[in-house]
Length: 233
Image (cartoon, rainbow, N blue to C red; front, side):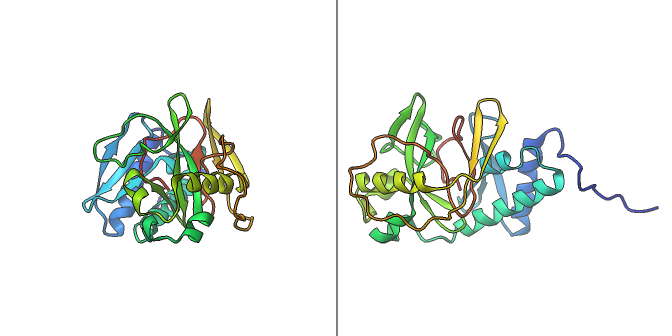
């Protein structure tokens, strides 16, 4: 009797959130990282937490695997885990120079309100719309690192400068793909193709436009529902 093999066009299991979560946990375990599961307010707001405290958010993995076959979804989850593991070795944002921050700062839309006690805080963030805030992050080659309240004092740029460059950089990012995994939720994916921006001569941007996209890591970010604040790639 021949061995059963998964067809390339086989869909993901019906309980996709649980399947992606268990797949991600298995892949981390194969890398020697045992994790527990932390659930947020929404079903797809799931974070894996390592024994050392490192957090591995899965929201982007859920968004990017929507509609994919089981085989392709496994590849997407593997890429997502690789990026998160790489992020754990990325230099801290407070060690970046002013020029590095000018090139790598980005804005990102997050839900407002207080997160869990063990989560980073974003009290510095600016209001975006009802229930949403505009926070800052730093774009690295394979990951995105959020700027949290605890980072501000050690940064080489002021908060106003960070928002000015962050919004300018985000506005310059091209949109490669739009996905609507559910009604009212849009996921935008982009990769960097433009050179770093020149120093802005105007005051900090007064309003966000295309906020919430990372670049080279092709991190998808929603423009409606977003997961709770945290170090999301």
